[in-house]
Length: 331
Image 1 (cartoon, rainbow, N blue to C red):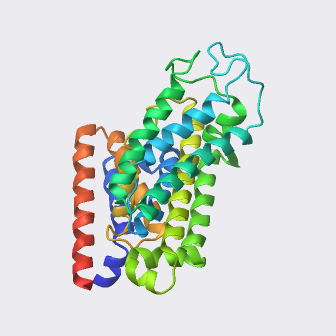
Image 2: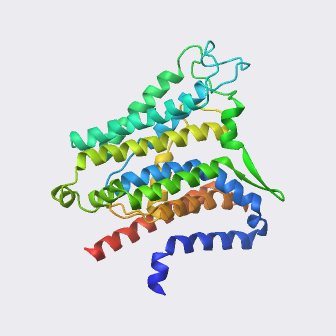
């Protein structure tokens, strides 16, 4: 039973959180509450999956939040209605929604590739490499955001065919709906599970994170795989930023601030090892849900946001301490 509890600890913690909050306010178990939690955390789940790729490969990525902001601004700037007075590109004809989305994802992929090249080819530690790109991406995004005639004004007035992917939903009947953004997050998680478990890249990712020297000796092209991993992560950050703009109906250059820390924390709490080589998609999703339940649930029962930060901090420290203890025990 102890071994079972250890392997399922993350899910047991999630269930316990729900039970405690529901005991204090039974309305927390309403379907509308579950739907709101899932909708608010779908973009964070996609971003956390991107961070999971990097962490399992033994790296880290501090640029995730700024990539989210960059892609949110890029996509939103090209998807405003013609009737909006303060249009970012006044003379831009209405584009098919897929074009700005593709450009935004491509921007995220390019940032990820830059991270991968700096780390794999120039041997710069991931923390320093992604710290540098985090600052640089924010600077580039701010310059773009400050272009005339926008001049750092929040981008709003987004087209309905774009915002529906963040706010629209499918009617299941009987008053039940499921948001499009939740379905997108589930689809992305399913694809990531396949990559993690059924592809050569996934196997190489775990091997590199477990022991990079052994992976190199066994014939794995470490540099090429790292570049691919960081590029995929960047693409997921980009998709997360685009959906965040669609969900909120706007964007600024400060979108995504500190999202990288939330993503890393969700991964660690979800069982992704800080030493690399260990992690699962269900664990990452459970980690995101834990923080989602904390943020939404504690607000739901009227607990101060400051207490929420304290609780989140303690959970993160406990998860890392458990991970280190497990790593030392295996060594």
